[in-house]
Image (cartoon, rainbow, N blue to C red; front, side, top):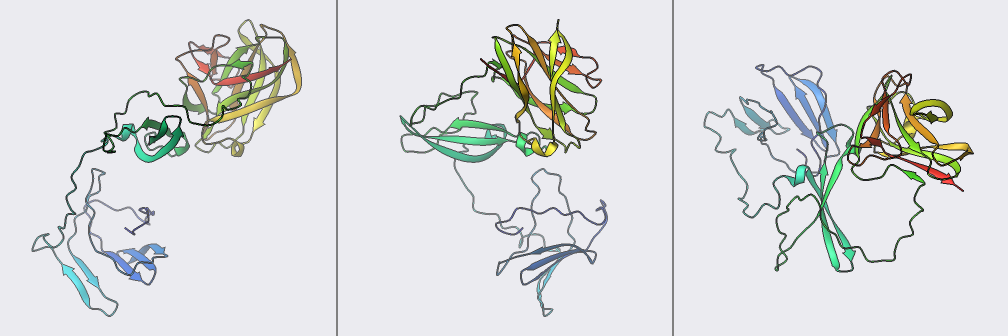
Amino acid sequence: MIPGRSATTVPLPQPIATGQSYDIEISVAGGTIETRIDGQLVDTTTGLAAGSGKVGFRQSNGDGERATVAAVSVTAPDGTVLLADDFTNGLDKWDSPGAVITGTNLTTTSCGGQPTDVLPIKTNAGTIYLYQSDVWMDAKANEALAKHYWQPLRFDDAGVILPIECGNSYQVTIPTGRPAILPPPPAISTGHAGYRTHWDVSGSLARAQTFTIPKSGKLTGVRFTSFQSGHPNAPVTLELKRVHNGAIGATVQSVEIPANQVSWAARWVGLRLDRPLPVQPGDQFALTVSTKSATGAYGIAYTDADPYGGGQAMISHDAGATWQVESNRSLHLEAEVTP
């Protein structure tokens, strides 16, 4: 372990076999550390700026790391043996626990994640401090999908932080400043509450959300929340289609968005019509999402909590040839209708 650096994992030229003995050699020369297994170089680390170091063993914390060490020796460049131990006299010289720390745990669970930071926010009632926990989804490779838990910290009269409760919701005072100038709401929205992410749009699996025009005007564009996962090797295709009697019909316009233009985190991807399309109240359309990618997938944001009343989520398992309704579900979508 190098102070100030995270642990480094390197691939080995051959697997380590359980029950087999190996000679591990770590040599330090100037700013370079070399690691060898049975004489074969497996890693070189450079840029070391420490003048001294220690020899020790790391205790496993339930991560499955196990090793039996038969003997240890530390040798200077001139051959002088600085340390040699075959453990026949026990581990007394190695057992040096740190100072005992007493106190109160603020949280033993970090509210389902790992503690990340504390954000101070100035408000009309003074400064509040929001504790953040990074809820990494089962150590998945796409960290952009990690969720975040926020909770205002509480303090006692002496200013000591009180234990974190990990509640479901909290009231937070509005920050100071001038009211924001918000953009006008979209003409069509499936809402924003209760959404979660999922990724399965790949190959023959496609998804769609239908919607209803609420007013006369011109339909100018539709946007849909998506992201990529697992390195798709083809663009994601958005198609605006007409809907007749609940059935998805002819294509109005489509767009292909390359994978390198789709975020790893859930964000809007959009289809802007080349020519605004005149529409009337009650007209129905669908935005379909598909890809020819054979690897990875594109994602959706969906909710089953408060479905949009003007349309429904649909799924296809044959690249859009047929569609099935997903009852009581909405995909995250907005559309613009101008006068």
